Image 1 (cartoon, rainbow, N blue to C red):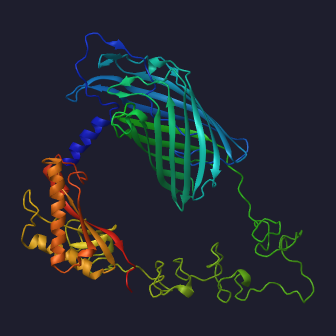
Image 2: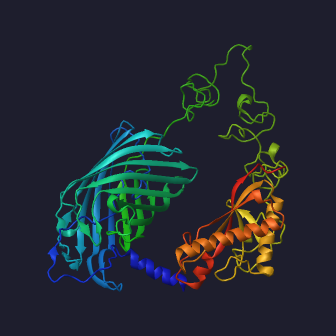
Image 3: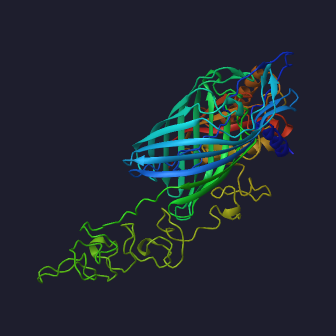
Length: 578
């Protein structure tokens, strides 16, 4: 039921600009329209919808494509009771036509032309200002011109960085809520990269807007923009999938609720060929800022010519590996394909390169010159056998005939993973604490966990320390005593923990000042208990946060109960004794 109510509240917030209105003046003035669309597609060539993979490779390398979007309820006026007064913009269908060109492997110029194919809604009034219904005629939005220059890194490296600027030209009418009626520009920084299959991108910028009039208790105006994306590159690099988060906040109302539209998007880009790809995604607004829709659906088509595949020359003799009969040894050109790229057969005093194990890999490049094995791009594994095929070569594999996993323990390296590492009878895949022995529990979050254990820089406890109502006194009895005894046991077993901060937290009932004092006293009571049980006082400190750091909403008894808690944070520790 809590999840249902949360979902209902979030859907209410997603409907664009959620406005708590006062009584409407008898005579309302007419407001100018403005650009409400918070979705700005990335430059063509990116494998994200909004963020950027920074593929700036090529000289006069073009990219063209289109992104279609449909937004539901991006601009809504609400009454005080939460009912809808009017949907100023209820549906908006836009096709973004765009292109880009890469120059000198460093510079990219791009263009985006939004075509507002359909916009519908109804007029509405708030605070004496009437916002007219959008015109239904097809119109172009403000054209965007942009440029980015590479500062560091390469496409698909662990880190690349670019700086750029976008300029919006007021080429559309304001009546369809597709234009500002004045120019905008936005300088920005973009970072992107890949580590294995993980891909990411982040962006920060500033948007100058000339429009500054108020809207629904907030103001239009210049904005700080931000965004981030993280996901996976799959299917041999042909697909990128993952979430994107992007938004902005107006400087005059920095991160105010109505002045900070934020959207989340889940999308994927898939290469159908080396040069052609399609994309699809769904987005939703997360805040009350105007222009953040209830739902946004996205579909994209794009063409960008593939780069020529890089040809390797491993031995540096000027003959590419795919033509070289001896790719690991420098040689000379020959009309005989079997000798092309191989050393010239000269007098006997120049013996051919040695290959003792006859595996086709010369000894000077063979990590295991006496044991035949396959070729590998890893110099430490090149030419080494791996009978069980687990990626751990035989000479380092403690279980040479059983596929396993790599381990820093030589006795376990290459051996199958222990199905119950902590030997508590709960299998690893079901154990919420696979490295800390505990008891079975029907709750999967507690299954196999002890009452107290170290995780994420804390001593975690499964149950709460109980206090008398509005008191700092710990409730006597085995419940709280057993929890604190478990914390003491962890501290006894881990003398390397030199400073532990005990934190007290409350729910939001009562006055904040009283809650602050109560949380400080409860944290101090726990410290006093631990010291009395033999824990050195200089290893402990206490701090209260009152109601300022809730874990759950304070709207339900369950949420308030979770917020009344004590936490144990490890502030410092020495190297663990061996």
